[in-house]
Amino acid sequence: MRTTRYAASLAALGLMLAACGGSEAGNQAEDAADSNVEVQEEVDFEAGTTMAELAEAGSMTVGTKFDQPGFGLLNPNTETPEGFDVEIAKLIAAELGIAPEDIEWTETVSANREPFLQNGQVDMVVATYTINDARKELIDFAGPYYEAGQDIMVAAGNPEGIEGPEDLAGKNVCSVEGSTPAQNIRDNYPEATLTLFDVYSKCADALANGQVDAVTTDNVILTGLVAGSDGAFELVGNPFTEEPYGIGVPKGDDEFRAFINDTLEEAYESGAWADAWDRTAGAISGQEAPEPPAVDRY
Image 1 (cartoon, helix red, strand yellow):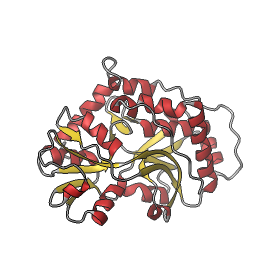
Image 2 (cartoon, rainbow, N blue to C red; image 1 turned 120 degrees about the vertical axis):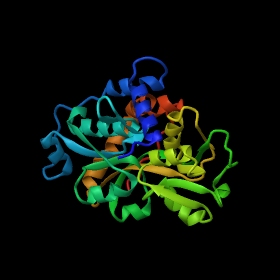
Image 3 (cartoon, rainbow, N blue to C red; image 1 turned 45 degrees about the vertical axis):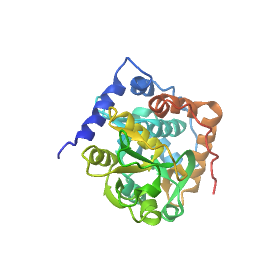
Image 4 (tube, rainbow, N blue to C red; image 1 turned 180 degrees about the vertical axis):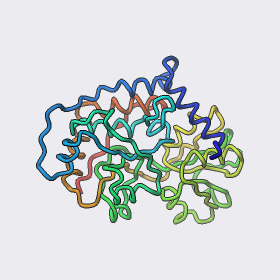
């Protein structure tokens, strides 16, 4: 399969993040690998629950993204993903008595997250996964654990003069199939021409090649892509939606959802959540850990 120019730059960013010197961003991978996740040695869950089954197995499968710096980016040296989503998954696994090395990471793109949960291919999905009512018909969500906002990425210097979603009329804008941002463009900005790929790195490559005028998705995802562009891209910086990120679990598994919500709230209180942010997405974006969102126990 052809390696696109931007995919290559993402790989280069992964190598940069794995390096030992330089900026805070340059130390992300090393810091993430050294995360102080305290794995519970003695756990006791009600028989028949997902928690009991996973704890007994001593391992779990987690779906996450592999191409999003700061949240889920595959490290080419270790062949494991790194980022804020990955660290959140590690915190949950640790409360089940499962060590990071016993997590099997499965790449989930926007379009396959629900099918992977429905088919039992993963135990949970932590993958910049916006909670919405349509998805709740198919799977359940714990969280949210972060709130992002849809924004727009353009070529450096913003040659098309795009300042917000209204300026996308008549422009070719790229997003990912199955994503909330793509559906938002379809529903609310139909005068834009939408180009869809399976992963955002292909959108970034299309922007670099002049195939599209802009890329739209959540601001934190775009921030990571800008960081990996070597000055080729910039963020418009005008978020126009609210995107609460949740942890996807199979539909009807209320006990597992409640357990994850408890774990998230404990991580908020202990500072583990903020520490995970600071070592990953915060290191790339330069943004301090925000106030965590309230968990929605629907």
